[in-house]
Length: 340
Ligand SMILES: [Fe+2]
Ligand SMILES: [Fe+2]
Image (tube, rainbow, N blue to C red; front, side, top):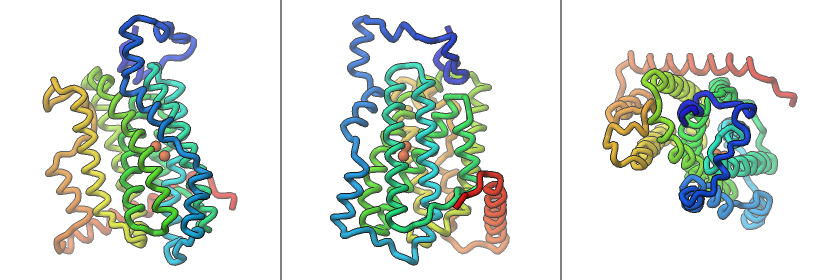
């Protein structure tokens, strides 16, 4: 029988594993576990915290006398909203794929509840944009590439690390920052609901990954690290093209990046806490992309300098931004074109 880690790296086909009869095992231990399992609790919490998107949007609109999005900020928000909206659609498909392919009952339940959340996020955000008179824009090339990679990978470990840890945590930080900018009252209140759901989705990764990561061989751990490093580069490149839009909305990209680092550190801490006996070198986070505090500080100062920069450094950063924007447009042209 393949180990849990092997089954995540190379998922089995139904012809070899269906039905997994052990799921019906009525042992005392199995029954107790089913009642107390923390991963399954994500599913139950999802039920308790479920909200009707139509009612919430209608009530918020009534409460604030309609949606009046500032005209001068519509174009910038359309650019940011494209990442959020198409990101929600990708999350919907990815969580549905996880619900099919994850074998153990609690993780399957948690992924299934995420499918409902993401479907709601997609239709509510799209409805909001339509009602606010904001154009649904095309997705930038680097963001598209990243999401397509996550949609296409057969490797469940890459899917969960990429989706639950990287994309979902970025979503939480973005939703929070946009809400804090108080662009438009309906949106501000709406985003609170999104953020609460996304935090549960991060929880699925935090709780299921340690058992898989600790079974990784050094070689597979290195491959995972490389996969995430590539995703981080794609995120940085995508950030460089979209940051001017955030700045135009009054959202400070530097602060958002800092919040992203804080959240990342917190996720790693929470994952290690699932294996307190392993100490600081916890295998529970084996292969995960980690960046030291000093590295985070250097990154922050390079991309979001607070001190006056020597001309060569300014030129270097300017060069990065130009390359990121040019390649973003080039990559976007390789995707589907809009019909409207
Ligand atoms: Fe979502
Ligand atoms: Fe999500």
